[in-house]
Image (tube, rainbow, N blue to C red):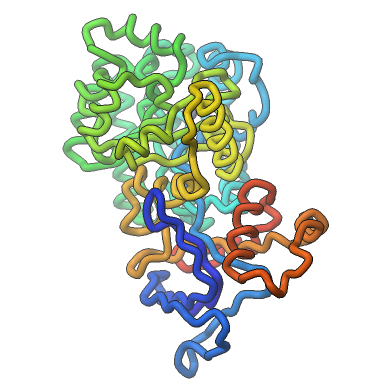
Length: 445
Ligand SMILES: [Zn+2]
């Protein structure tokens, strides 16, 4: 299959490439085998006889699929609710009661199909999910991602402490054993090229030191992904350090127990000290920036622009649904921009997240956080074709977009129009502008 489209994709943190006419060759297994840059004005035919070629319709362009590095599948049912609370109260009053209901496999089956369909429809081709603490529900979520065709990391939540009696693992040992059973299920039974297991200690407050040690040993032996929350909220940090008084910092709690690796996904990181940032860098761990959630729960503002400028490039965006109130990553990108500009105003500094950096976070940066950047993140040869076809002029937006279309569109350079359409889609578009979604070369929406 060959797709001939205008494309926009990140080549690195500060390099966004716009190309007016590109032929992307995709093999039957979904791998990008060739990327041809064509003369924008020419109408040359591409491909050999018998090869199927898809040409862009007017105003359409292609971008890589969006990567959500942090979302809680059992919390989607709470979207938009409970934002009068801060993190710890919100967990106890809103989150834990909902997650506990996923002990019922029928609820998990029905809800997780809706969750995966909803995230795919807004262009999330890859998502790193927390399931609930239930083994069966977590297997169901992994199966649903596989059958719906979404690339995903899926993890059973581990929590044996400081959580309600009705919603906690019976012991550290049982939590570990169920986690091992889950990982072996994904690796040996599901055998999906799309779905990976991820070890998911909820956060240090909800995990005993014994549990973190056991999970850390397993992570080191198995070279498996791990995701957790880190330094989200000041009340959370104070409580955490009261539970782990012998560790130098919140980040050290994880580092000292084998939880920090190059496959670690650390959500939030709002209040890291310089020493903690260096620890994250030393372990080459990834940061999931969740700005919408950080504002909603009044957690803090992570200075992602500064982290990127200091060479910490393994950073992506997380919806943190339902700490965040919208499915997908577009809102996170917009809030990341607002958060960065708020810091620029507060500190009277001229720098903030550029468009190039924002889209990097939503795609290639997210792929790096999930250690999947050899597979996804942009349209490089050898990667899998995870892509969105965008048309900013679809019915929902047509009047708005056309009302400020340049009067003399004929004279506007095509690439200039592409840049304008792309930026306006990112900030003023909707999921209705997403015409098609591809994962692994297959159209899934
Ligand atoms: Zn979260």
